[in-house]
Image 1 (tube, each protein chain N blue to C red):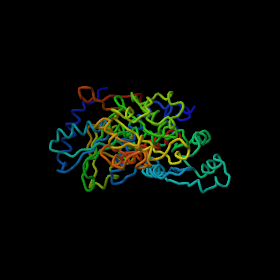
Image 2 (image 1 turned 90 degrees about the horizontal axis):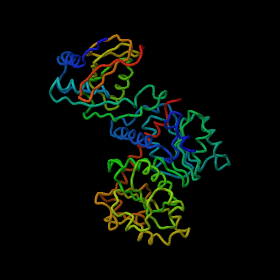
Image 3 (image 1 turned 180 degrees about the horizontal axis):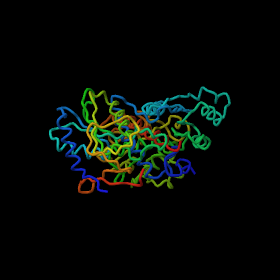
Image 4 (image 1 turned 45 degrees about the vertical axis):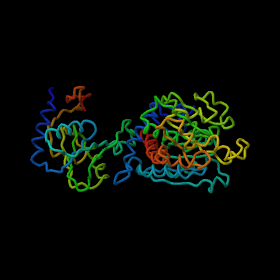
Length: 164
Length: 318
């Protein structure tokens, strides 16, 4: 099956986001794929958008079952969260558990004025009442899909593993 | 023996008892994880929910302020409940054995024991007898090991020097009685430090020092020359009575780190000390407070390192 080109999805996300994107709004990309998408969005939206990186390793709900992820990275939010409008950015939206963890993480930095969410691909399968305001593509694949970046910096979607 | 006890079958950290025999992969993972925890101390909410609902028991059979407090802060920043037990004034004095004490605390739904004990091997003994969901972290046992201190020292060195591969490190002072020195030596050699020196009078060096993979120096003049890192060890006052040393004044003259002696080291050398310091015995006040000193950052990093260890031994397999 042919998967869409991430660059086109990012273009369409930019068109959806731009009309609502007020000055002062910040973006937070979720490590790793979400950060790539955020950087691409920021470049196309233009202007000097405050940006940060979230690693949700310390907020996962499966910690007691599977332990700490061996490559936990520091989160970095180089702007004041308190009172700020923030756009969360991730590559693939699936169960919603990552976003639940990300929201808890953001609130430990302060109380944002609003949180909105942009994802490259919504592949369904939600286990929590969470949805994204901006979606590049909705794909009913029945399989895991992931965003990869090659050495040249080109983004590509790839199917992984067996049907779920 | 202890390496297996410390790791799960799939190679994850299960207990932290000693740095001896722990692979570089695990040491590096602890330091990397600690790196992620450093910034949490600067946030609005200085907590993450990793150990929410877990009970951490601080079992200090020997006095400690800094170590116990930083373990307590670390556990609280991970959202655990912390119970501090002052064992010196508890049931042990009434004749209860160590394993009975631990069994009773386990019956109070403990999830982790942080243990300091004057006898070498006490944390190992506890680790061998606890239920599968309970982890043990050694907070210093006898002359054997003080692994979290060793790790926070490695974190400090990596923070200021970027790595270990081109470093000359001198450990100065009472190596014989120091569990900290042992943990530092194991960690430095495992992490690839090419030259670890111990600098001390013969009476304060262990007999097996030649088998520790270190360079032995008997004078400060050769010992700290061109070093990147100087770690001063605490001289325990009780050693004076044991005829190992003539006097504190004499010790300071030959082995105390002064501004003059520090000039022998590299100009960008860092000076470390695990605390508590004896100013005017092993270290001059001017050096302890000077621009080369990273003694207080060591304490701050100790929190992040202990958070890393506690979160890595918890979770998974439960």
